[in-house]
Length: 292
Image 1 (cartoon, helix red, strand yellow):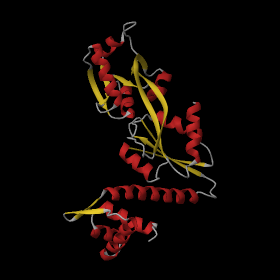
Image 2: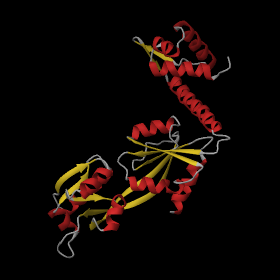
Image 3: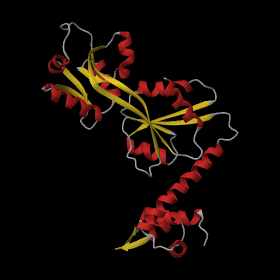
Image 4: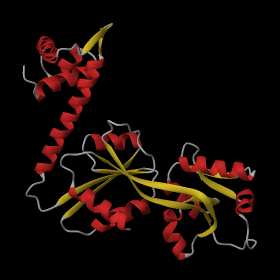
């Protein structure tokens, strides 16, 4: 039997549902038909792809390998369809996903070279890392901007490029403060607005205060840069964040840097998928980011 997308689609449906009944229902075919096709596929490959556990089916080792290859084949097929669908169109589309906690100033700066171009449509989405990576896998997104590197191994389909490493400062309202305050004095005497404990930046900050022997006074915590910025603007305390997040406020003098936190930084990464037909706009914005 020669393999085709039909056989692989049936196999993937069984693997996802874990039962012949559920897979048959999702594909709107009979259970006997899907069972016959599965047996034919296993015979052609020379291996059992599932083992029965109770009422369900679990992938064997050979089944797991087959599923990985099947997913790669479907990604390539979807990639081809999406790419060729753009042929002949005057406008190109770039779909960018950004971690919801990422600086909006950084996001807009990244896509700035494409803003205003009559031949380009930008689609910007934000979300949690798992949702963004799913969007990348399904080709709903062309690129993901994040500060969290995805797990990778030798078989990983992801390409990760470092875009920038931004310094971190303590930022707040301008007011009369003692001249030449040390970092330790600032961090130990002022209420602070901090990223939440699960973030990499917060872990680095906690290590810093531990080394300095400081117990910070926490006024507020937030899990995204936009909220940290708003809290700083509201005067809730001094915010620990990359200055790019409050670039406009610093330039206008509404906020000022009270201290630079040497050794602390926030990395910004671009994650793309290995694709046979990559979106040419991805290479364009990444090249612009390199030059910037």
